[in-house]
Image (cartoon, rainbow, N blue to C red):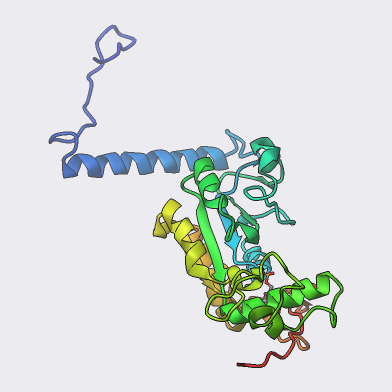
Length: 296
Ligand code: A3P
């Protein structure tokens, strides 16, 4: 039905529906065209300031779920090159340790963002948490999942280096070899009682690196298109490439370029290069010296 004009005549209604049944190809094409027009119109309205694009805290669009000691901090810091990516500084650990604090608490940890910006958090222990995939899915099944992986042996040595330095037991903790394949029962009684093919597979440093076991849980809850794998070795050798691929996965136009990076002259790891050429490297807990490990 048409409306009425000022002179009393009835408005002629023009159908915007294309010929053909509602699910025919021309109809779908037109529907898509109108949707796009609507989106552009909305963007126009927002950018003209009629509807202010105000900031607010939102649940993350993407989560770096792990893997611990594979370069998760480097990934997050490098992604910040893109001004549309916003992340909380510290690890939130909501879906593993802090779940009882509730969703309001979780959202409160997030940065303020505008429409069009991407909120991302990283908590590397989610990867091997039994509950995290299911909990993330129930909050938002469209969450994008990012996983950094590296050679599991290098990862295990990095994990070992971190725990021995954290506990200030360098020199006291058994060697990596003892922990991995020897008698570590006195050190980690709970995890070193049995061996799998000669390896203390219950020791966290090894258990976390059995990627396929944990990966299965993620694949049980998220479609493969929602999971992006970052190569932790390439993140060191060619960070711009890995960062651009991740930006694309997040639906953003990549801004990371090789000239955004330099190499730490001492640690030899990549660092961000400021406009004035100064390097901004990760802190002293990243890029630690690893002990020599005897190949068996
Ligand atoms: P090491 O300190 O044992 O060398 P995560 O951030 O997930 O805890 O991973 C830490 C590891 O990231 C470091 O382990 C290091 O090998 C690796 N890494 C990757 N890129 C790095 C960078 N640009 N600076 C420092 N460490 C980096």
